[in-house]
Image 1 (tube, rainbow, N blue to C red):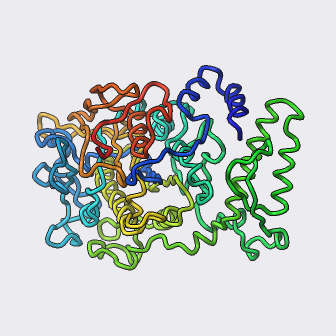
Image 2 (cartoon, rainbow, N blue to C red):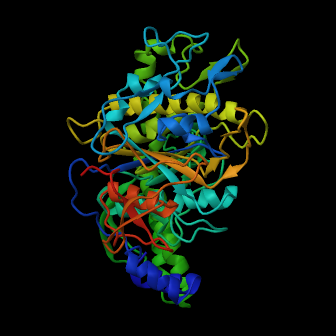
Image 3 (tube, rainbow, N blue to C red):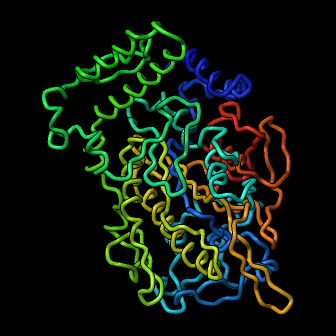
Length: 526
């Protein structure tokens, strides 16, 4: 799709004011990514926790004196320990600079992390895989809303609202890196599972839009090149390599392997250009771009590539001892109590996400972590503490697998070095508060302040940036605004998105988020 016609389309769709903002942001083209430092990752993986979570129960940034004011006294939930006091917190490593180090409640027995019964091995994975070496957490982010759908949009693009007013961070990154990886990554942006919705690439070209791939089996009817999967194409599936042409018939600079049917379809779009209105031409350009993308995917035979790529590998070949009390050979699972609860459904989606990243077929991957925290009951805090730590340990295993896998095309680098992993939810949930009589009020509603964990390449090690008051409100942090000026204020969703894009090597002039945005200092490597 050419820039000129896309400008026309966006003017019609968005109006001149919004169009001008997009133009200023550099989102109207998909120019080659700038040369970046070797530590800048080239992939994004978003692990999304649906329903609103309570991150301070996992990584605790508050001062010790505030903990008894907002963390209930230690007790149990479904036969598992929950809650903690300040004496039970441990640092994953010594502090890195002026920031608080990553610290968590040591619910496990340090002499035997696998032990159950009064102990819980959940969260030990962050220590086992030494993830503090490439991880920091931003706390106290104001989402600007406590509505699920609006806050989901805020998490994805930085602006709360009924509709996307900026492209999702996944799409921005997929678009930014498209030219560099267009020949090798036929699926720039994949959604494996999305319980709260699908991130959208508002206004960006078709290659930045999400493709939903829930399983390899789901791909076969559409994208398999095997005659056994799609026998009706037998005799029509021979491909010939040639220069890729845009809808105007001009070379894009890339190559494309096409079948006879695809070449005919692409040429028809070119022949019909300039015969009707500008709106029709814009539609044809979009259709031509989509056909080209599908052709590239089919030529790559992504089904065969995914089938031959190992997803969950380390955790099967060398299962960590601390998981010995968990179910069988399933890698992304946990149990509570005496068989009271089993989470067993994460393995397929985590395995597919790992295959997509290891195979180097895509740039951005989005996957929900399945268990919804929208509880709204008197047990919500115990549920958030126990199950949240279970899901976060699954996150640790996912990143441990990335840390053990080599990065495609980058000798000496791991896949975690070449991936930015974001762990987030749409917002937080109500905070506990201790009354004068020592009892705790445990409301369980939506709460607009949340945290985002950043891990992987170009992420500073072992830092907690920002914090919460005892009432769960965010506190000011150091921010470099979009105009380059320093400020100190409570971080917003737009700042979390901006920080992610800066970690990926983009400057604040490469994108635009309505309402203002800045990079939070301390998360990206200096």
